[in-house]
Image 1 (cartoon, rainbow, N blue to C red):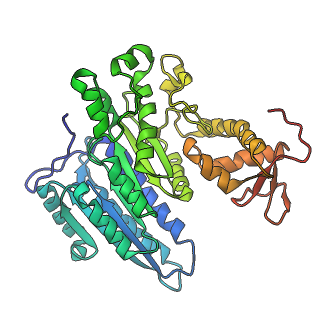
Image 2 (cartoon, rainbow, N blue to C red):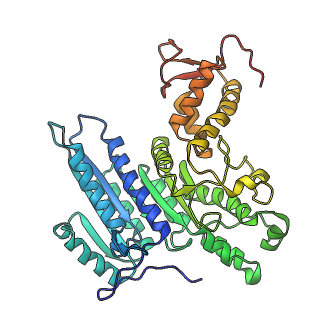
Image 3 (cartoon, rainbow, N blue to C red):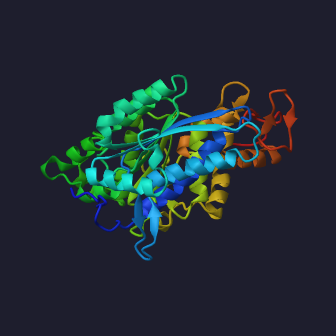
Length: 425
């Protein structure tokens, strides 16, 4: 299978920035800023430690296809984001927070690493190379174990790390490698791209190719024994069907409790790339979901608006572009989609509350349990709960047993059925 690898040369011109990388860079920059802001909300902290890993770092700079304007690659985005965050955090603080961030930039092409070294020196980062900046000419997978041990030694109790794995295809990072990261460094997060369009282009029953491709992608058996010919013959939108079968297996094998999986926009219909965020914490998942809504022009979701994106079965006929014209439009993270999300949640949340054992559900626990299946972030869930409260279909109670009738919903609030139950479910 041909791979779309960028080419950097010490004597050549810069490669052109592709669409999926523009989207990735926008999200990366925004997420790093939000990540720092979230972790440094405590005014008493005096140090911030973090390890950043770019497993497919490239040469550090690109040019835009139309204007030929030079744009930074992910290593410069990471470094610049940390420099800017440190300056902003310390503007109004009497006691300065010291940033202790080390970065590992890895690429298997030696000349690409040499270009990145030159780029970093030109951008005034040369003094940090070999100290807080580490350039490795290597395949990421051969270094993953060493990186895990480095993070654990550096922060034994809370090894914070972000692994950016913008792989060239869909087999460069086995699911087992990600599982090792998520298991051994519970505070680590992984941002992974997956070229699902490439997989669908080359998948075929011929010579056992489908089984081989899915095994290399880390999802053997995700089609439950069905052949590609059978799927194409009997499923209207076979591409969506395969993706809807593929993604839960991939997520499960990666071992993350929380995740987002949305499509990087493509003019060709369903997105060429998956953009996947993996973590062990609901709060991290919520921060990333908010970024997707803020950057909705880059991303799209081909599922539903409520608590079950794919209606629980991996594939929904209502989302099939041959059955419903709406699927071609997708879920675009705009005003209409926010309204749709609130409406869907207002139908679904009461069913969760009414069927829950005990008095009801604590909001944070309810959100953490169901957030992976929803494209909505926590504030949208809270708005749905607030409207249900205002309609007297649910009650909201603070831990003090004080009933909340108008205030904003908080994570510790208990959501329960009203004393006078009249709603029919």
